[in-house]
Amino acid sequence: MKRREFIGLACGVSVLAATTSRAAWAVEPRKMYRIAVLHPSHPVSDLTENGRIKYYREFFHELRQLGYIEGKNLVVERLSGEGRIDHYPELAREAAARNPDVIFAITNLMAGLLKEATSTIPIVALTADPVGTDLVTSLARPGANITGVSVDAGRELWEKRLQLLTEVVPTISKLAIVGVEKNPEAPAMQDATEKAGIEVVGPFYE
Image (cartoon, rainbow, N blue to C red; front, side):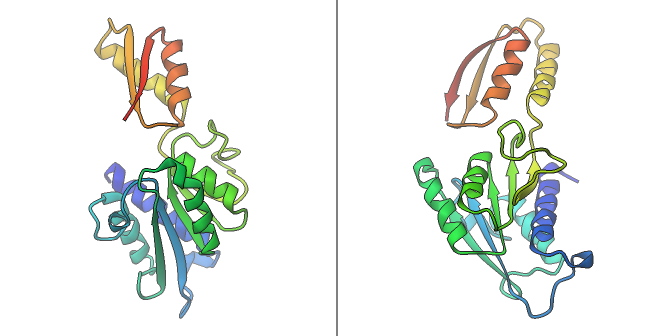
């Protein structure tokens, strides 16, 4: 299974688990479920089963396979921050105010703002290191109203990446870091490069 397909499946299952506690995740007949889907920058037209982003296609496909079908027993409310960081807190509050059964979001920043906006609506997030950024207590027991999938285990992962990089380029002494503004992975990257004795240039924000 490809990485994005796995992420889509895992997030779909996480959302499903957050919406119901019925045995075997059975779909309750005649009940309409409501999900709010947030993304920091992608337009809402991309956050669909037929959109251009593969992990959203896999996400909705998995929900469909499990019996949750948009337009039949599933209502999806899509919201985008359109890349405007100053708009994110308002977006999180708007999603919470709509009172869906569950909220699905991307990035630690968006998940953290949602956690501040609601303590009762289940939040499923696709994030970087959620423990290192104080988003959850632990991976095994995240606590509160948040769960999800992590695609970055923190400093240990970056140390491994740097180890592989130095095996390919043994003479490396300087590394430029390019990322997005307020990237929660930045401290882990910085710590790992310093531990490896590599000078960091940047970070440069795209």
